[in-house]
Every structure is written in structure tokens, then in C-alpha cells.
Length: 484
Image (tube, rainbow, N blue to C red; front, side, top):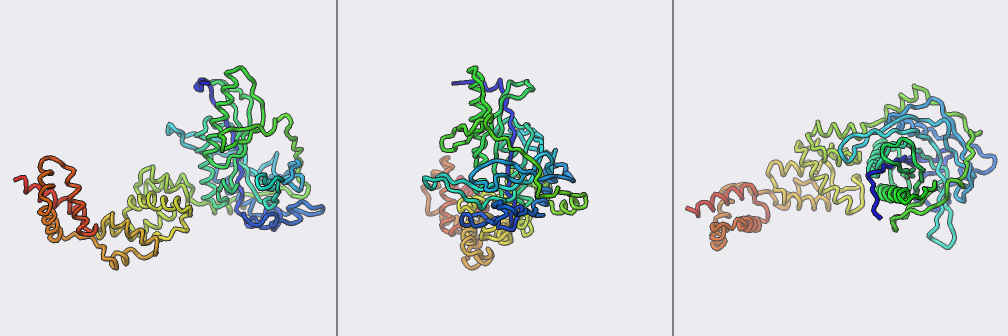
């Protein structure tokens, strides 16, 4: 059925959970390492045995304050832990330690670029600390299996105001949040492993309306693309219901990426009342100005500032600056290359095409890439000086990946230095033309494509070492002589 989507607008709020990169859990000394054997990273504290006392991990507070500062939040000097009570097999305590009425960070915002290139401010209502629950595994056995390693792993929950109106804005917002947590080095941002998770609240209303429609919540989206798809699906579903005169039911939906559909999990009417109350075992968290100032020293240059600097300092196009600053490690690698070459645009091109292509293909990170930034800088200089051609540079680059050798050594050892001696090249050009008289005739009769044939023959003769600019120049001069 076709519906008029232009009559409606969506109202979207996002809740993002980011798992913090601390070595130990939020309230005990157990390891937070992902991938350890099931139910091995546990102790009486994170399992909630009677009589145990949680002790807050200081790093959790510091990482949360860092995120608050990076997203323009107010850091509350006084915040309180609460117990969120519900029963679920992967929650052995029967409650989750979270923050409710008094979170640690409030009233922040970040800016995103919309499809029409305008800037939109998305307000962040709160960022609070909490512990993660365990994991129920439904697909390995006829029984549901429970792994409680994740119980007690520290999280921050970042909650927006309902300021997002399109799936693309949601995608841009999530990309920004992921970028910021990675730049701060407080979360690895891996959605597939569950260290960054997102739930979305969605409603639709007629454009111009100010009251909110009935909202649904979508869970189980494990990539930014899936968030975008799920939102598109749910917005369309709600519009169709309204157009058909049906009611939207407030419920929680689970996204199924294989079927590209969302299915009801439970209706909110039956949902739990979590009966929050202050945790009697934990003192309020007091963060004074002195501590905030000490933490703020650890804020690195953030993506937005780095993006602007790359454009001004390295004269890069906006597109290049955006790609290079998406990950801090890639931005750092680029700047290291620029310590060894002043051809910044070439450095950008090599990273964006050759290196990022290699990283994607081999599913590795830049810190595992075999070519050092210094060696890439040297390779770019060899091209800039005309010592080797761009074509030969690709060959040298492949050898560098295999051996991690200095490109200058490779070029010398393999005798790959570009032939830029005019006299030497002229002899080769004359020889090729005299051997291919038919093609010369074709060229003179107006078949310009034959020019490429001559270039190919010269490159073959010189094993790709001829200076391409000089070859073109000499060829044109020699072919002109035949016209006379």
C-alpha cells in the first residue's frame, strides 16, 4: 500500500549503552575481558550473593565524566545509585545497579550534519552509570543457556531528547557517539560484540503537530545500518496504521535483520514497574570541581576539531578530512606520514584507497597494518621527486606490505628507478614508432586511441620504469614530425 509519508514526521529518541573499557567490573575486581569461557569472570559480588558489598570502580566515574564533558553535559556534583528491580534468568541478583532520579551527567548535546548539509543539534537528556546484565543464548541448544560473565561490566547509558526526525539523523548521531567514545578510548564501539548497543523509541505525527504520538520501542539492532532499516520499517508501519484508521499499540519490538521486520516482544502495559530505590550499599557519588578539572585534562582533540584542523593545516578537501578523522588511529597514522612528506594530498589518497581497502579486506585495524607511517612517507617522496612512477609505487607498496622494508631499499635492490633521461627515452620512442608503422598511419588518420598503444609498448620495453610525463611529451613531439 502506498502512503503519503510527506504528511507525517517521525519523532525518535535513542538510548545508547556503551560498555566501558575498564579492566575490572563496576563494583568488584572481576575481569571484563570479552570472549573468556562462559561463567568464569564472576565472583560472589557480581552474582549478588547474600552479605556481599559492592565497591565502586573509580575509573567508571572518570570515564563517564569524560563522556559528559565531550558531549557538553552538566556534570552533577552529587549523583546516586539506584536498584532497578526485575527478574530475568541472566540477572542473578534480581536487580541491576543503575542511576535513576539523580544521574551523573545531564543537559548535553552534539551536532550532526543532515542530508541537506544543515547542522542539527541533538540534545542529550542524561548520561548515567550502570552495570550490565548477563547474556541469554537461545540458538545453541534446545535449552536457553546463560552466561553471566557480563554481569557487573560497567556501562554508560546515553539518552537523547526526542529530537531526531529521520533514520538518517539517527545514523549520523550514532556515528558521532561511536566516534567520541573511541576518541576518548573509553569504549571500543563494537556493536557486533555488544559493547555499543542501541534501543530506539519511535512515534509519528502529522507535520505541524506538537503533541507526541503513541511510541513503540525497538531493540536488538546490532549495527548502524540495522538501526536505520528498523526505523524506516517502524515509521512506515505506524503511518500505514494511522492511514487505515487503526490504533498504534505501545509495545516493545525486536528487530529481525534477516527478515527486515520487527516483531512484538511485550506490550508496555504488562511491562515491569522497576520499583527503583536508592541502593543502600552504595554512597552517593560526589564529583567536585577539582576532580572534574583533573579529568578534563585527559580529553583529546575531538573529531570535530580534528576535522576542521585537517582542512586548514593540511589543505585537505572536506571529504578527505571526514574519512581520515572517523577513527583516531587512522588520523594519527596520517599525521605521522605527514612528518615524513609534505605531499599531504597524496598521503590522504594512499590511506583512503590503498590502506583502508587493505584493512577492510583483511579485517584488521591500522595498528596491525605492516607498513609504518614513516615508510609510507618515504614512498610518497619517491613519487614526488620523480624517482619512481605511480605505477611502480603500487608494486613497491605490495612488497612493503609483505616485507615491511624501507621503499628506498626496495627501489635500489630491484632497480626500479624511473627512467627520466630524455636521450635514453627518445631512443626507445623512436624504436617503437619505427617498428609500428601501421599504427603510426592509423594515428595520423585520426585514431587517437592508438596513442595509448605506443605508451603501453614503451612501458613494456622499460618494464614500467619510463617517466610517463616525459614519454607523453616525447611521443607527441615525434608523432608531429610524421605529419610534415
